[in-house]
Length: 74
Image 1 (cartoon, one colour):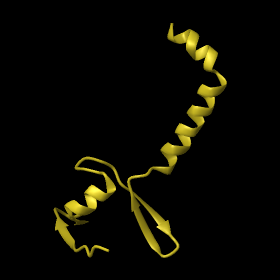
Image 2: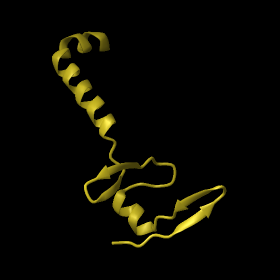
Image 3: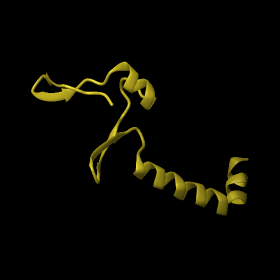
C-alpha cells in the first residue's frame, strides 16, 4: 500500500504517483487512468471497461464477417 498526499497544482488539487506505482500499473506521463466506484471506496486503473466492450463487439463482427473483410483487404 502506498500513502499519497494531495498537492496544489495550479487551481486544482492533485496526487503525485510514485515511480514504483506507475511501473506496476504500466503507465507513464500522458496515459489515461480510470476512476471507478468500488464497494470499499474507489479503484484507479489503466483498464477502460467501455473500450473493452467496444473491442469485444469488434472482435465478434470480425469473426462473423471474416470473408467480407478478407475481400475488402484485397
